[in-house]
Image 1 (tube, rainbow, N blue to C red):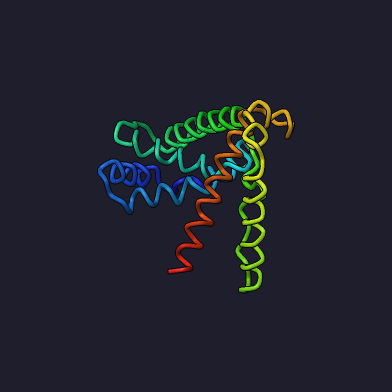
Image 2: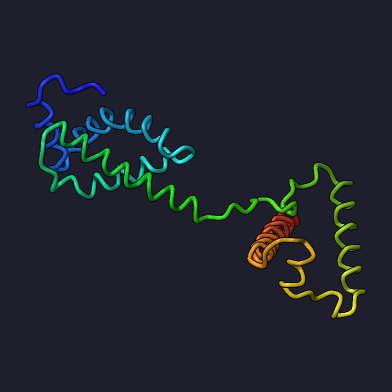
Length: 178
């Protein structure tokens, strides 16, 4: 990271930024953000840009009370970055990866014959479901989880996402008909 050529210039820019001068804050950002993002790319892979954004929000919140020179500012910013990277890592470990697509959300048909074919297939599927007796058509979450070999939570998430995808498809169909 390049140091400011004149320590007094850094102090002037910092004072101006603390006073709300956007150009001064922009100068601080242009100076510090590239090395910050490079460091975060190593310490928070796949999350460096998001973590850098969180760091800058923290810097903005604490800028008015910061006291120190260029070296202290750099240390303060990277301390914040280290803490945000640790938080990001913890959130990532706690979050379970659930696939975003469960196969329901597909691109729409490209022509009218495909639309008719798709509508016929949906009607046939609904007719099949209606032909089942209630015990067959209504599995509990636990039963469904056992059948698909997933956790009950994953089944609930997939059902919710499937319903939302169906809702979007129905809304798009209604919109196309209007």
